[in-house]
Image 1 (cartoon, rainbow, N blue to C red):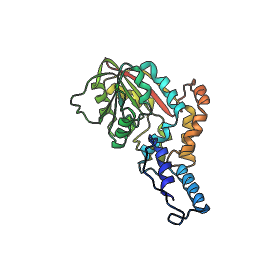
Image 2: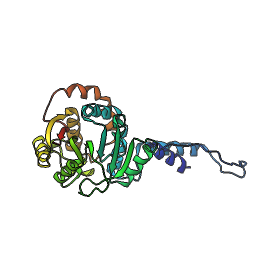
Image 3: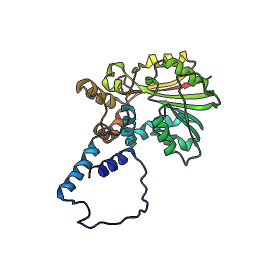
Image 4: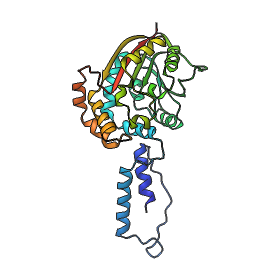
Length: 286
């Protein structure tokens, strides 16, 4: 009796679409069938509760984190509002993941959502299968080889650059894929002092200092039009979870708790402090 509730809970966590289909069913009498008792009911309830709490979905830590952040609609919407003034009509998103932010760019124009993870690419294709303005493709920005690819007026790279060992080469490749006067919208983790097991667990090579980031952008050929730190409250939470409590990953309770604090996050973000979770930087191609 454990299989059905476990599968149901996991399907719900994955956000899959569930279809009801007719079946041919021949019922059995009590004598012929299974002898279901009250213990079986409690077992089913226990399994539902267990797999609601235990995120055992057969995916890696990075993919699981993306699934958790999919539910952070207030946070994602807040980040989008910061990016919105810089988004053009021909958009390439580097490292789209499962499309948590991609959906916000669709009203702006044509979107190319890219990733290198087979899991993420399948999720993107499933999510945007019926949207003609979204193209999904495999793209490894760390390699300078892009046959039959167009140029874009906007490249969006959100929380991806820190996963790439040679980040300057990746920035150069983004520069090559931009049209003249095109913009790079870059959002990265800030403050190396916050680096902890949580970063290591999701594959971060580094967290950035603003001067380091803008220097690398200039090295890649960009004019830096804007750079600013964001999310002081998030930095405090990251420090407590990663440095004080020694956590190795972000949990569902962390995400839901932060969602509730979003009004305060927006209020404190009016202060430009170096102690923040992220840096937003805008690069322009001359």
